[in-house]
Amino acid sequence: MCRHGAQAAPRQVHAGAGGVGSFAIQLLKYWGATVITSCSHVHVDKVKALRADLAINYKAQRLEKLAGAANPLSPIPSCLSRLDS
Image (cartoon, rainbow, N blue to C red; front, top):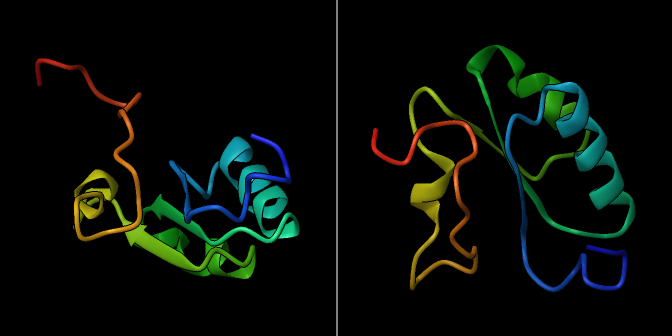
């Protein structure tokens, strides 16, 4: 991903409150992207302060469930769980 492709579609960031996730949110927002991230309810204010457009509480809703035919998000693989779970 580079800044030229950042605005093409909303970008998803897993674990937006973590070190890598918070960096990714800031970089994507700098590039002009719409950012959707997952975090716990405790960290919603933190990722909003980083300018995430939408913060999904991963304990209440799965970020992957937002993807589908009627949604502009493309499906993403989960690197946080096993395939057979």
